[in-house]
Amino acid sequence: MADPMRIRAQASGDKATVRVLMSHEMETGQRKDAAGNTVPAWYIQEVTATHNGKPVLAAEWGPAVSKNPFMQFSVKGAKAGDKIAVTWKDNKGATRTDEATVS
Amino acid sequence: MQTRRETLKQSAVVAGLLATAGFPQFAHAAYNKVAFDAKGVQDAIKAAGGNALVESKDVTITGPDIAENGAVVPLGAATALPGVKQMLILVEKNPAALVALFHVSDAVDANFSTRAKMGQSSDVYAVAIMSDGKALWAKKEVKVTLGGCGG
Image 1 (cartoon, each protein chain N blue to C red):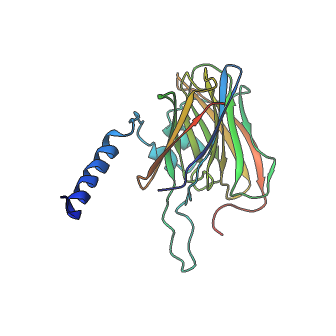
Image 2: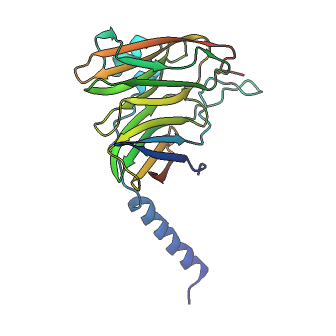
Image 3: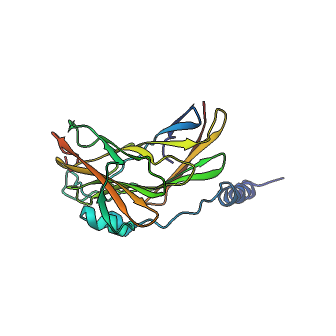
């Protein structure tokens, strides 16, 4: 299991800005190791976010997203105390969900 | 009295139940492999469902003028227009142009930032695909002094 994500959700006005930092290698499949073998691709393909259990965002990523990906988005109508959960799934089928409270 | 074997069996069953029932399932759109495999900007936009390409001042791309490290280039795509279906971030000269694709719902703003890898200096694009299939784009040149591919 990968390391937990760091999620910060901050309410401002009628929306909340959510910043997510995931922990993932994001291997492109283009790199070669010291022996000249191609390092197989290993990257996050799908990211979803929910606000109090209701899906609000779905994203698809390619291998060109940086290692330990960062993502920022804002959720309308989210206020302090609400729960924001983020889930990712990589091309090997591994998945992880973490949750944060809007402050 | 319980043997060690029985205890192990029971805990395996419990773990299985947790795995199947523990987490809510989301309705995923199938991963758009065609769009992410597309080499060029236009092919990727087409594969994502955009037809008519129009340059637009209402779409903004944010990024640095010069990126010192091509492995971590902060890029953002935003628009205030209503009726956006998807937001795309693309790097023209990467092996595959499409970096990220965000499905916009009513509950989120069409304003996303992330970090991308860039192999070399290139134009980067923010594309908003509207519900009628129009693809509004904006571009910006980012110079990279150290590439993010290979090593």
